[in-house]
Amino acid sequence: MSTGDSGGLRAIAAFLGTCWKINLASALEYRLSFALLAGMMFINNFIWLFFWNLFFSRFPIVQGWELRDVMLMWAIGAGGFGWVNLLFGNFTRIATIVSTGELDLYLAQPKPVLLHVLASRMSITAAGDFVFGLVIFAWVGERTLLGALAFALGLLLAGLLFLGVMLHVGCLAFFIGNSEGIAQQALGSFVSLSTYPSSIFKGAARAMLFSLIPAGFISYLPIGLLKHFDPWFVTAAIAATALIGGSGIALFRFGLKRYASGNLIAARS
Amino acid sequence: MDRTMGDSSRTEAGKAVAIWGAGAAAFAKSAAVARITLRQMMFYKTDFLLRCAFLLMILYVFSQLWSAAYGGGETGSVAGFTLKQLLWYLVFTEALTLAAPPICSRIEQEVKNGDVAMRLVRPISYVLYHYASFLAEAALRFAIHLLAGSLVVWPIVGAPNFGYGWAALLSLSLGALTVTFLMAAAIGLCAFWIEETRGLEFVLQKLQFTLGGMLLPIDLMPDWLQRICAWLPFRAAMYLPARAAVHSGGDHLLRDLGVQAVWLAVLGAIVAVIFRRGAVKLHVNGG
Image 1 (cartoon, chains in turn brown, blue):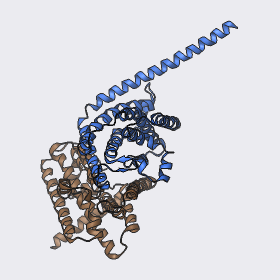
Image 2 (tube, one colour):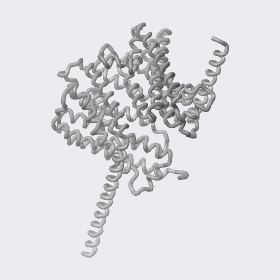
Image 3 (tube, rainbow over the protein chains, first blue to last red):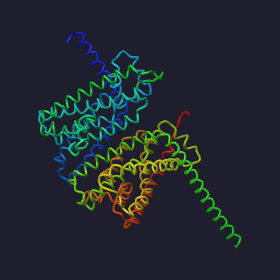
Image 4 (cartoon, one colour):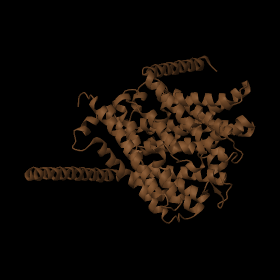
């Protein structure tokens, strides 16, 4: 790596650090609201686990899955969604930003556009998701160094998969115009699919969950990564994450070439 | 003496006419709001299609989950529910859940951006306006979601031949949607004090999903939880109509209607108190 490259990376790291610091300061301006929203999200996730607890009290094992596996699936899903939504909170709003012309604001500034868009917002509720993930892992996960490292890898993969998928969906706005509704439904559907045991799906549905709609790579992490380490699955999950992320970035760049300004006067939000 | 009695009875009759007239006017205004809402909805067909797509997806997931839990057997019964009854039960609860417009967020937005002031000066009660709009939107969505849900479940477990269950479902759905509206309105109106009600709305939704029996019929829950659910309003919003539908029965219809009536009275009173207190402390600057 050349000195120029490392200097560029340092500048980007410093830029990201500043964005996150400002986002956090902004969120903490209304501390009570921050605590309430994050706390409510924590409770919200916990209520889902309560449902699963009721479900498994009737059916203790379903397709090899037990309550603990589902709890870890939620820990990885919510934790992964939480960290990416904390650090890159605009990843769910790309369609809105493109279709409303808010993108002009970022194009006019001398920073990497996509990174700037993503890091310009911090989701307050995401703090509850992230903490929830950590608490559930501390509760039922394997509390060893190896277990913690595997969980951290799971969080990283899950977060990047959420980011990559929403990047693809958000980029639709470059090609079909207003796609906010589609993006919202896609997010809801993807989150839902990644929080049900992948083993309940068979045939074409299962194949789709590990290809076109890669939610299966998130929902199977508690089994393939944490419970019975499966090197083939983990390799496939890493490759899928890299592929989806890379193609998402390429799609955004391609879409940017087609982007026409809406002449909107906007401020960072 | 006679004249006094005559005056009194005329006054009573006058009051009755006035009350009847006010009620009729409120009904006419609500019907107008409902008509306007339905017309507005016709412009958002894409939103409809997307919601239906989500419903199809989630029902497909549920059908896979419950088929796996039942071991694929369509004849066995768990807590009085066969797989067929359970999947159709989920169609009804999902259709009711997704039928409800986001009334909580709408009220919160109106309070936050000051639009509430515009609504308050109109010649119709603020809560009644939202109720009429809510009901019109919810009724149309409910019908469409029932059709969409049938597309997933019918091919898997067969036709919904529930006989009188359909009549029970329709009878209890109006009360169910009204209970849902009142709970959401109570949370939305809290925006008069705390502005941000999203967190409370999340929790309310999840309580409806679990304790309301949306994801799991209350009969499948442990006894201690069933006893708690019996004292909460959530089951009146989803469980009662969906269970009555799949158990083909009018056996408990009157009792279920009574339960809904009690909750409508209690929640209606709570919403009225919150609204009155909130409206008194409202300050809107500019316009």
